[in-house]
Amino acid sequence: MNRPTIDPHIKNIVFDFGGVLIDWNPRYLYRSYFRTEEEMEYFFAHICTNEWNARQDAGRPFAEGVALLQARHPEYAEAIAIYHTRWNEMVVGAIQENVDWLRELKSQGYHIYGLTNWSAETLPGVMAKYDFFKLMDGIVVSGEEHLLKPDIRIYQTLLDRYHLRAGECLFIDDSPANIEGAKKAGLATWHIPTSTVSP
Image (cartoon, rainbow, N blue to C red; front, side, top):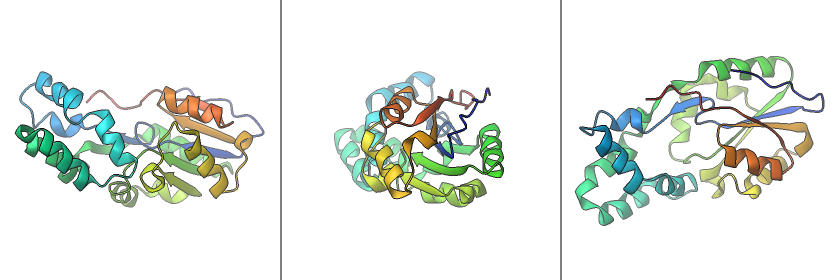
C-alpha cells in the first residue's frame, strides 16, 4: 500500500473501519449458503441490498430490518435471517498492513480516531476482538448517530465531539463518496483502495 505524505499541520488521523481496518464482506458467509455465484449475486442485488444494509448502519434494529424483508420475500426468509444471526461470519480478520500503519502513526504522536458506517448492534463484538481499537482517542459510529457518511453532519459530529479542527485531520476511507463528504467538511483525505482479497 502506498502511504501519503502527511502534511505537517495534521495532528489527527481518522480511519474508516470496513474495508480499511476490518475485512468485512457478506460474501464470506453467503458463498457457502447459495449453490451458485449467480444465486448469491441476485440475492445481494435484489433482496439484502446495500441500501437495505445501510438502514441498519443508520440505526435501524436488525430485527426490524429482517422482519420487513422477510414479509416482502418469504421465500428467502432463512437467507435473510442469517444476515443477522450469522453476521460474525462476514468478518474474517483485520487488514494487517493498515492496522500496522495505524500503530505506527500512534507511536509517532498522532491522535487516532474512527469514523464508520456500521450497525451499533454488531460493532461492539468486533471492537472486543481486535485490540487496536483501544489505541483510538475517539470513535463516531453511524448506527449510534443515525447519520451516514457521506452526510457532512457526521463528519461535523466527529469534529465537534472531540474538539478537532478539520484542517488538522486526515481522513482515510475506501469509499470515494465518503472521501468527497470529508473534503466538503474541510478534512484532508486519503482514498485507500479496499484491501480485501476478493472473497
